[in-house]
Image (cartoon, rainbow, N blue to C red; front, top):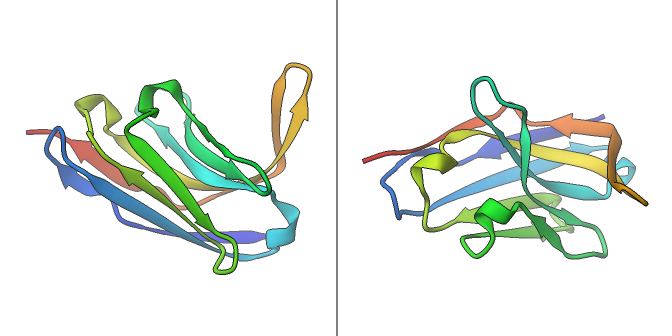
Length: 125
């Protein structure tokens, strides 16, 4: 099992910035990717950004150029810096740790997959 503890989030005006952080503990060796997903009511949880061990980051097209992700493998933490926030970025953001496996049709996500408790990000004037 992997436990994920998130911090950050809140209310910000359009164009503003927020930083989300997540600390992992437990069976870290069972996963190779740490990152963030988000979800709004009535919609599926979607990838925001993730970093694969030994590889580069993966971003959703909607956040490229605005969000950056960083991972500290020594501390088992991952952070998401969100700049130029838009109202459509409003969602519950979930820290994620999972095993990503490349396939001919894209990434196979888990198992295992682990989630944080979620933190609300609201972008509104």
